[in-house]
Length: 167
Image (cartoon, rainbow, N blue to C red; front, side):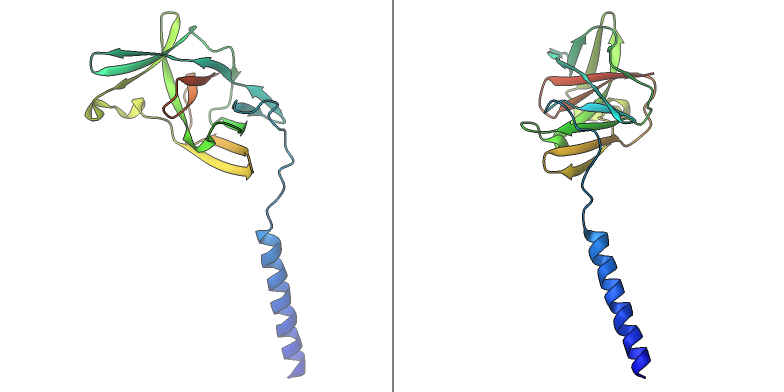
């Protein structure tokens, strides 16, 4: 009987120590963004800065357009499900949205109808997942496979954009 009791106590202690180890957060040891408030594409162990810019907002009949100059972003990734790292100071990482952009002449734009009933699924932001790695450091991942094309990340309610191209 004493042997069974000792085994039960040892098993309980082992299970308790396992739970403590499993709940201890791991310290992030990967690459770190050199500048705050700019999303960086993760390419293996390298970080590639997104194209930083301001979108020009234009109100048209029944729609709002945000336009960025240039037909293509110089920042390119082969990743169909890109991962971003961002160190935040001013931005709220969880308010960043991802949009597919359409190329019109020598510019890229996102067009959103002002009437919510006219918004098509492809006009909505792409689903993102947010993971806080440590205070002020976030990993943001596309929640779906992105087709080849132009994209931009933008904080909700802001004209600031961080553009890239999936090829």
